[in-house]
Length: 492
Image 1 (tube, rainbow, N blue to C red):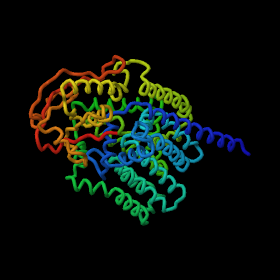
Image 2 (cartoon, rainbow, N blue to C red; image 1 turned 90 degrees about the vertical axis):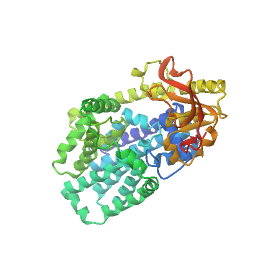
Image 3 (cartoon, rainbow, N blue to C red; image 1 turned 180 degrees about the horizontal axis):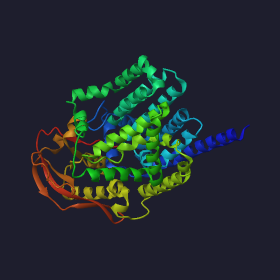
Image 4 (cartoon, one colour; image 1 turned 45 degrees about the vertical axis):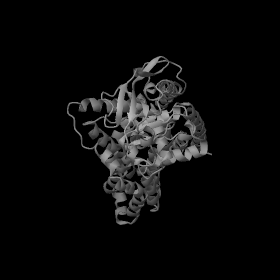
């Protein structure tokens, strides 16, 4: 047997063993890491299933529902599908790399580089809409790669189904449509598909899969579209440089420094090689450069959240395999550094072995001190003889409902709760005294139209290992009648 075949088989066995071990570690991290407020909020979605929500489409709620049915209502159940989908996505990405750039170990290196990024490490151990989005986005690339390699039209239907499921995960998936259209128009060897029914059937299939989300929006005043559409076409000349700096600096950090530079070089290379009208490179360029331009445009007027550009990395990881030897010699040190940084972040998030200030510990703000805060709130509620504890931050309401004692009634106070099928909270608060908890970072005051009485009390602090994460203000409040935007938070 030729040495290259033996070496290739050895590499594949190593890849599968490493992926299985990495998945096992991710499951452990997912079970042990404290839950973030956003994750608890999405868990509430799973307790009130719908075909749409104010913030995002419903896929994350369905995933959490399935995970909790299989593994219970704890952290592992909520996050169960995150490590599993990361493993499946890695396999699909590896196959896509083999189809698009054969003979360069593109598939395995793409999977290794992507798995070594911090942004993928976080997404593979937590549950947010980006988790299913990345899987179905990658599945779309895989299906398009199969189409490119085989020329079989029915792969269009697989791509359409994957794209529809990506749209059911997060609206960012809409960028798949123009990227694929650019691929077809800009690649002479692919233009014949525009004269066949396959891509149109794929688009129809994606639309059918996405239709329930459209129907929910139509029934709720297009609330979700209005919320997301409000972020489009802003411009702030005074802060554009700041937002652009945060975008590029944040992505360099989340990709880890070496892989971040490699990814940037890969995108530039993809665009340059797309000029030759090579179908594989046109696809990789459109799936990386187009989203990048969209996020750069957004940064001219507003902050780009660090997780949004995650969709760029799967195709960028494949494109990296096409870099010159000068670049490829950085793959191993880049992956090694990425996995070391990932391990440090996982250990700090799950076990908090070192007490660090918030500027040096990104896990503190999201994950630190919530259980101790719950204990403080419970003590204050009992001291005030409060009949309920209310929060006007949706994530804090959802998380505290998981952490406060079962006998405590937790209310969410926000207009978004009127869109949920949850237990009406107005009866629990009307004419009754309770405790309102608000972050001190908010510079406004409790809404007097919502409460009959508002009396300030002493504040509380959320901290971990002596390091302060956030201060909170407490108020004794009495509810008014008929408030439809107050909901009783479900409990695990």
